[in-house]
Image 1: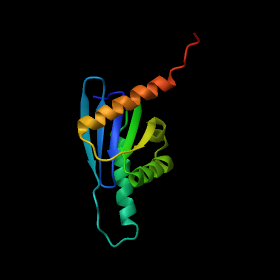
Image 2: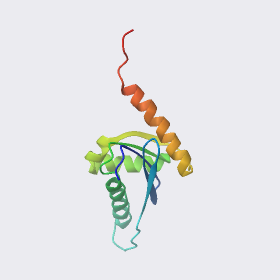
Image 3: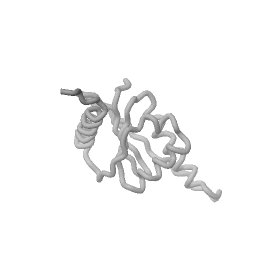
Image 4: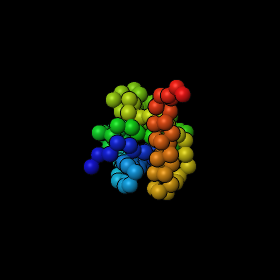
Length: 126
């Protein structure tokens, strides 16, 4: 099932993708698969593969909020902007946040999207 909104909590090794609406939330986990090789840049390739999987997990979702540590957000944002322009268009916010429970994360994302949608609505002249 694909829902309209999602929040992605990301660090450098795992991501939790939560699709939600007003009454339900569906969770998906994405984990980095580290390949230890002697080849130069193998860590970068592993990180890019991980970030690519996170982007794939958000396909079909109209609006995505990404939360995590400052460094994880910066690295993921740089990857998305350089390699996944179609995903970048659907990301509506980047928020630094500590670890939260799934319920806290969904509640924060619902508040964010309510405020975001309210800002996008033109004000009527009274």
